[in-house]
Length: 157
Image (cartoon, rainbow, N blue to C red; front, side, top):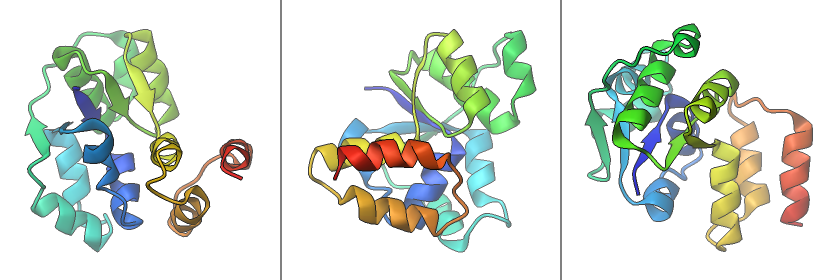
């Protein structure tokens, strides 16, 4: 299964100690060079920078081929490259929390998953406690509509 990751799911899953959910759910994952740069940026949390400086074998950095899609130009470089890589690889999923990136990806036929949906899938399999994981997530700078969390939390009540 080809999966491409944008910066935010990696960032938050590393911060809450659940980055290993990615290979458990999807096997290998790819990131474009721009995402690696964002993960290594000095403003990124230290544990995220440490993760990115010694990527595990299941996470592969690939060069994204530029695609000429007008809607993609409004996105930042990480999202643009993640979508382009998803297109070129025929990725089954793009993992991203960015709303605009999800809209553009879906327009291009790419299914998307957010950090919350990754936690939801892991909880469905009995691997994690959804409520505890979301609590840790909300202790970071993660922002989401409370209704979205409430709807997923009710499922795991």
